[in-house]
Every structure is written in C-alpha cells, then in structure tokens.
Image 1 (cartoon, rainbow, N blue to C red):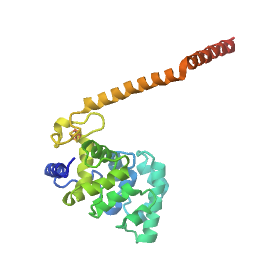
Image 2: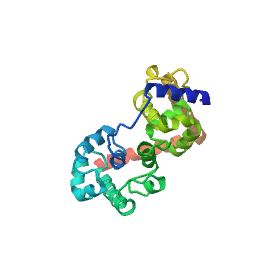
Image 3: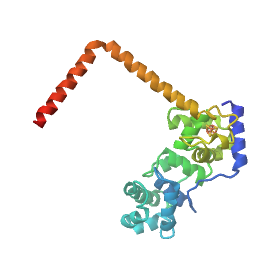
Image 4: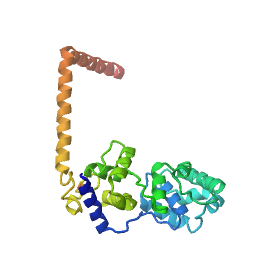
Length: 258
Ligand code: SF4
C-alpha cells in the first residue's frame, strides 16, 4: 500500500470506530495486566467470564497473594494453560509488591521483566493502560498487515517495526485496536468478508480468496511436478528398490501372522 492508501485505511477505520479499545474488561492497569496474562492462547470472552468472578474477590497484587494459588486456580480453571498462568500471576504479584510498590510499571523494560509478560503483553499494557503509541502484533494484526500490505513481514517483530514506520502518527495510538478488530471480525483467517470491509477498494487482497486458493492449488500442482521430476532423476532403480522393500515388508507381515 502507498502512504496515501495507508492514511486512507486508518481514516476509514477511525470513522467506523472513533474510540476503539480492548474487549477485555478491566477497571485498573493491574486488572488489565492480569487479564492480558490470562488471555494468551485464550479468548477474551473466556477471560472476561473468569475475571468477572475473580476481581470482586481479589483485584490487587496483595489480595491475589492472600487468595493463594489454589483458590486462584479455581477462578481461572476454565482458561487454557491455567496452571502456568496461575504461577505467573502469583509471581508477577510478588514482583509488583517487591519492586513497584504494588503498581503496574509504565516502562517496557520493567513490564517485560514480569513473569508471563513478553513483548506483546508489554505493548498492550503500554498502549491501553498508559496511552503509549505502541502496536502489539498478534495473529490477527499479523494477518491483516500482510494481506493489506500496510506492514508486510515474515515475523511479528518485523511487522511491528514496519507498522511503527508506516502508520501515520495521528493513528498510532489506536492502530492496534483498529487492526485487531478488522482482523477479528472482517478480515478473518479463512474467508475474509471483503464485501463488508471498509477498505475493499484499496486493499490489494480484496476478493482474492479464490485467487489465493488457486495459488495454493498451483503450489500443489508444482509440488506434484517436482516429486515426479525427483522420481525421474532418481532413476528406475529407486522405483525398483521401493517395490522390493514393499515386498519384503509384506512377507515379514505374513510370516509374523503365521
Ligand atoms: S478487503 Fe478483504 S482482504 Fe482486504 S482487509 Fe478487507 S477483508 Fe481483508
């Protein structure tokens, strides 16, 4: 996409949703931090269901430590990987109390030092709790950035760097949420809903699901051709050897049955 098209993309996404935010429910940076730790490889809905019961009972580092790991697990057991996540939450609460007076730190370095907090989680906290113009790249944003060409890249870090370079300043603050919502509800993985998409006249991948399938099909054809070429190159001996091995295997099976 050209810079003008990227600008146009965010202008339209903003027009559709002027103040986008996370779908995780929270009332403080600490609640958001715990929710994001719990959300790894889990849906926001499942996390919200668990925290709706947990937070009225314990929503500070000290209260979670007082709760203890066994009771904490009983609140979050419906979330995938809850054993590891419970340990990370307990250890994070300890570090917050020991080094940050019980507050969530407003710095990448300090956030990434917390158990269970990686670059993506730190970016979400910095952006959503503290208003930094960071862009956390998850599976949805990775897909959308590549499909639209806003920030193509082979891995999440490459995409994140390109997004920071390519997204105009005035849109950076909310870019994470606009892209995540686009990927979650419209530019979905299997069958993107291009007919409902705000940028279907400028996106280079618009209405190309069939094209993508045909790309896959042509890949398959190419692979089949390649295997034929490899088989030819290996010569007739290779074929005879394979047949010979198959015969031996059949004989072995028969003798073991007898
Ligand atoms: S036009 Fe289609 S492929 Fe492009 S961003 Fe929209 S939904 Fe995704």
